[in-house]
Length: 250
Image 1 (tube, rainbow, N blue to C red):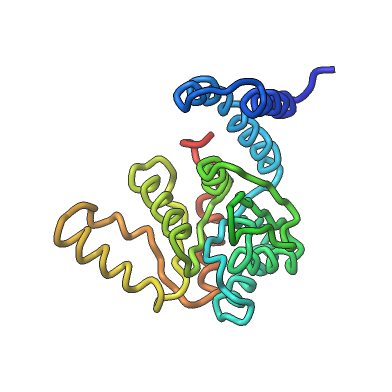
Image 2 (cartoon, rainbow, N blue to C red; image 1 turned 90 degrees about the horizontal axis):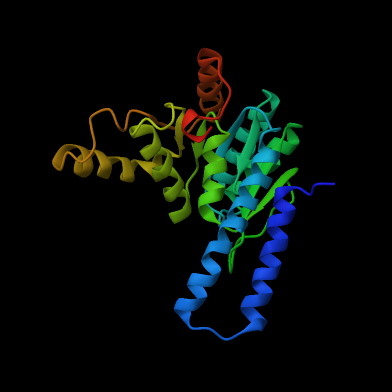
């Protein structure tokens, strides 16, 4: 019986790791020349595994935010409510699978009896998979994980967060600006947190230096109302009449 490609890829990786660690000494250049091509199989296995799982999830919304937010924080409570309300409208909730905001959104989706997807990433500290994801997927590569965030979402909610959240915000902004994906709803939740960044982008990037166009920030919606978040996404889903999966990632 033919074995799945992902299983074969993992076997190749095991052989490769053994050869690297035990078979012979080699210089750094030799190591890169011998081992980097095999890395492709690990990357391919991540895409195969995640695509197979995500293809069965259905329409979904990704919620980003800090892993360091405590359960008592108002943003934790808001993310839980948003996740629950989206699930009650038959939308899956996708997060990075870790603690903080990610846990809150997954918890809300579980409370709403919905699909709660956690795209967890291997990190040397801080990140661990939360217990509220009923569709967990583990990643080694950030770029493979980000493809799944975008490919299977019809809307994005950005709660307050750090570098990772900003990375994910500007990733989607760039894809929308360059028309690699449709202008899905991009909602910044928490005006007191996001207003400084928006003022800087308008004042410096847009008005002073003209590095972005007048309409490039129009895709962003700022709100402090959880019901407005859900309503914005449902309105888009209803009027667009389309599933997730942007053509750029098909």
